[in-house]
Length: 492
Image 1 (spheres, rainbow, N blue to C red):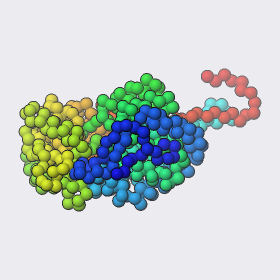
Image 2: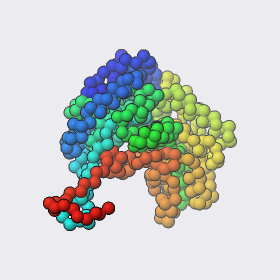
Image 3: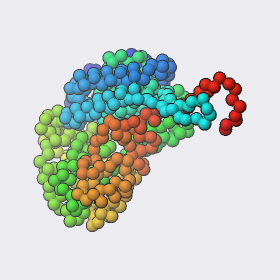
Image 4: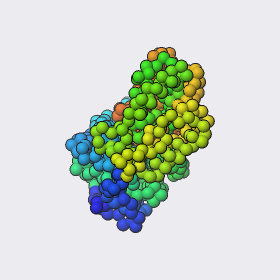
């Protein structure tokens, strides 16, 4: 059986930790991929030490050369895409087509960041004194601690690692312990791309042991986290207490507004993919539909027809429409919220139970679930479920729709379906989310666009796009006097 290893100082090393867990396929728990040894605080500290030692030489490497190494890693991801994607599907449970799409996004982000190695520009700024020049330059911050979740085990690590490295930082990386195999394959891409020892380090372990060690270590100068709101806010406060940078992307409860003038076929297609793709285990998943009464019944008739036709099963099979929840704990969370929805008076239209086929007997499956007549005070309207559970909120007016969409603590992404340009722009300006779509699903994003949320979804600077480099760099102001004489003025 494969035992996953840490990556410290350029070497794959076996953890000495005493706690072990199996890495199993959530679609069929009889399929065991390997064994995870949860690392110790001492091993996490050793990774930080290795990153700190490598920082000075990595910082001195020209940014275009750092970018070239990241570009080579992206090339290797592309060459190994089938192996990485199949491994990702086996340990996380999303469809193989979704895993391939995720890996392509990781490649796109790597290529975008690699090219930015030639665009880490400062600016020349006019000064008040004659024969003096002022300019700014971008410099790396130091050791970056990157803590990532299980639901996008290729894309999210890469959208943190790639900009951190190109900017000249060294990295300690904690992947989710549910998806170590994907993380290890990514490390091999960077090793084979020629990344120097110590620049990128990986420790597999718990948040309590590894994550806390990273956040509290005096040599760590910035932290980027994606995960739950409670943990993210805790990390942000602890980082602030140390005076270091933190960037935390957390929960979501993403709404779609369907107006009475919407193209219903387009809206149904967008909500279907947004709510049930990746088994609802996306931070950008559609979990609420706020719809005007006039079109609600027609919309639901079409959506339910698609849901009833779904095949739930093995995510490696091309004809499967939805795979499992990631593990028993996540499945229990989903089933608990379904019970909460029933008990609070929402009308269950479809699902709410587990499939009974032989294909799903050994996995963590739940049927796609839709609740109608959900009120904005219900828990299933306000709390993140992270499963294929969709709430339908009926409203009379567009104003009511905006109020309902904005009525929860999260603000990652949103969408509206309408043919009305005036409504579209009013929605864009009034919706309380960091990402918004018009006539397209709540999902996705492109490498060159910023990613992040408002309210209790995100704190700190945005990820992705060019904005991410503001997080991973310091700005140094430079003054040069080429008069060759003593300055007489006392400017400031």
